[in-house]
Length: 608
Image (cartoon, rainbow, N blue to C red):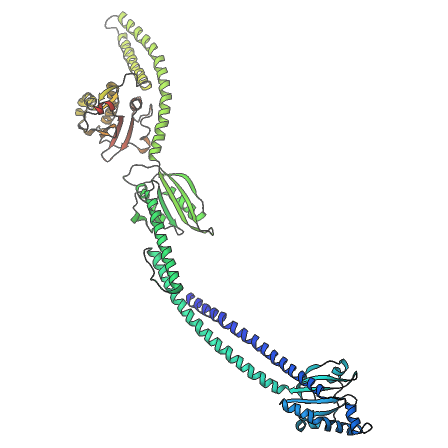
C-alpha cells in the first residue's frame, strides 16, 4: 500500500512539474498578449487622432468666415462645419473599419462631425457631458486614451487636443467599441488555450512514458540490489545510455565490495584473536577461525543466530554484548573462561566495540577475544619463581640455623643413652629423640635442596637411564598396590645437562605422588620424546583429576592436600628443573593426570 501511494505521489509530482510551468507560461503569455493588443489599439487610435488634427488645415472660425456665418446661429454654424468636415471624417472612418472618428468644437460645445456619418450622424450637434474625459484633454492640452461608457457606448476612446494660435479650440477623437476588441481578445485567448492544452497533454504523455521507463529501470535496480545483498557475485545486465552507466557503476561497486569483503575475511580469519561481529539485532554476521578455537562453536553453528543462543550460560560475555548493543557501552580487558565440556580451562580476555554509522546510529557490535591461557600460566610461573626465590633464601637461613642445634641435641641424646644401663626405660625416650632429630635433619636437607638445587655440576645425563633407576625404587610399592608400570622411550639416547641425582629426586617426587593417587591400582605411564631441542618427560596416571584451581598451585612451597607431608616435594622438583632451564606442567587428560617435565636437550651430544 505504501509503495502504491508513493507511486501516485511521484506521478502527480512529475506531471505537476512538467504541466504547471506550461500553464503558468500560458497565463503569462495571455496577459502579455492582451496587454499588447490593447496597447496596439491605443497607438492606432492615437495615430488616427493625430491624422485628424493634421487634416484640419484651418480652425473652425476660418471655416465659418469663409461661409459668411460668423454671426449665424449655433445650429447654423454646427451644420456648416459638419458639411465642411463630414467628408473628411467619413474617408478616415472608411479607411479604418469599426473606428469612429470626429471633431468637437469647444466654443460651440458640440460634436460638429462624427464618422461614419451614416451610423453616427445623429450625434452631431450634441454637447459632451460635464465630466466627459474630452474636457480634461482640452484643459490639460495632452492626448489621452480612456475606456468606458461614452457617447457611442462602452468604447476605447483616444482624444487629441486641437490647438490653433495658442488656443485649444476643441479636440479630435477616434474610438472603437470594446465589444469588437473583446471579440479579438476572445479569439486570441482561444488560440493560446488550445496551444497550452496541447502542450499539457503532450507533457503529461511524455511524463507518463518517462515515469514508466523510470519505474522499469528502478525496478531493475531494486531487484539487482536485492540480489546483491544476498550474493555479491551477482552482476546486472549491461544496458544502453544512462541506465547502463548506473548498472555499470553498481556492478563496479559490487565488485569492489566483494574484493573488500574477501580481503577483510582473509584478514579476520588469519588473526590469532577471535573476532565476532553482530548486527543491530544481535545476530552473528562474522565469525573467524580463532573464535571457533576459543569457544568450541563452529562458523556454521553460529552464523545468523542470536548471540544469546550462541553464548547461553556464559554470563560474562552475555553482559558485555548486552551492554554494547543495548546501552552503547564498550568493555575493555574483561576476563572470561569458556565452560565447554571436556575442554581444558581457558583464560580469555574479551573486549567489545560499537559499530556505528556516520549518523551515530548503532549498527552492531564487535567482540574481540584473546586466549591468555599461556600468558596466565607464564604470569603464574613468574610469580611462582619470585616467591620460590624468596622462600628459598628463607629456607636456607632456617636450615642453617636449625642444623647446628639439632646436631647438639642428637649428640647429647646419644651420650645420655650410652650412660644409661641396658634395659633402662629412658633409653626408649632417647631413641625417640634421636629419630626425631634425624627426621628434622632430613627436613633441613630438603630445605637446603629447595634453596640451592644447582650446587652440583651440570653433567650430561641420559634421561632414560635416570628414569630406569628411579622406577626401580618404586617398583616394589607399585606391585603391592596393583599398579602397572609402562615405559615408552621414543628417544632413549636423549641427554640433558643436569645432575642425575637431582633429576632422580624430581622423577621420584612425581612418581610417589602418582602412586599415592593410584591407591586402588591402575596404569602408570612414563614417556619420553625429543621435541624442538627439548626433552619432554610425561608421567601420566589413571588417578582422579586435580581440581582446576589447584593445577597452578601444586608447585607452591608447603602446598599439599594430604594429611601428612611437607608440601615441598613438587616445589623442590620445580626449583631443580628451573635451575636447569626447564619447566614442569600439570594438567588433567582423558586418562587421568599428567605431569610434563621439559628440559633443554644437550646440544653437544646432539652434534655427535
